[in-house]
View: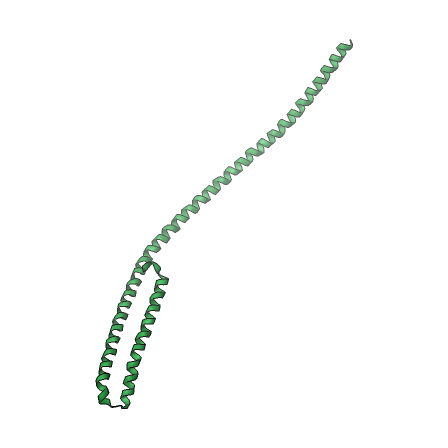
Length: 163
């Protein structure tokens, strides 16, 4: 009988352990179910946020494309202005070159006249003025050339791709 009683007690203990195991499994499954519900809710929220972000990114790309097209159009309109400014610069350079040649020829004619008038002047007060003008002309030409070279260098530094 003792053996039967031990078996009955063992079966009762096994039944209690099984019942405790089932209770803990039920509690674990409920916790897992709650976690899964929260995970599903989080995933839905993430999907909504990702959809919102993708809409915003699409909008930003559309605006960026519009700005790019606008900038491209403005650059094309500026091209003609830059071309016109270059033409004006070329024209000014030609005028400057002509003025330089004219001043050089005037200086040469003044020199020749001064040389011709030197013996006739005989040391009068006009001789000093003519000599001063003759000496000043090369200095003025050198100053003009220095000004031109500085202006050209400044232009080359400002617009290096045009040279």
